[in-house]
Length: 171
Image (cartoon, rainbow, N blue to C red; front, top):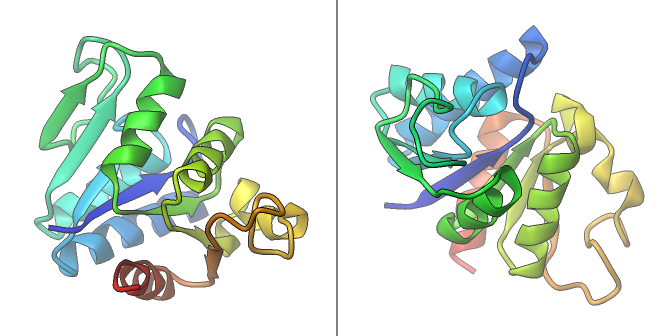
């Protein structure tokens, strides 16, 4: 099964982001893919909720040694014994492709880790946060530096994001 990592901020998020995350989770499940995330709150929780509503499989890569920080929609909790930043590296390496919604500093770090490891990332631009800004600071609007390690893709809708993500796996 294709493993799609969803990255975005934790904590309280606006209703528009919640709706996008739920829609993304549903779309991932409906396309027969497994949703991977950091497994906590915010974008991760709402994407997990959407996947579960569509009978999908949800894997949460959790910080620490307990399931306590994991959201209630996770089917397979993976406790890493690590802090949030190192947990994020496991998420990046465990995903075939990543989709970015919104995002703060932690999400930006995940984007950078994906870029360094040549993992495809699709940025859902209308979601705000770093997802709405990254194109303006990216080298040639598509790379994190002049090495052009791997192209960052942008989508305007959830369906477009999944179409791009799945097409990147066939390259």
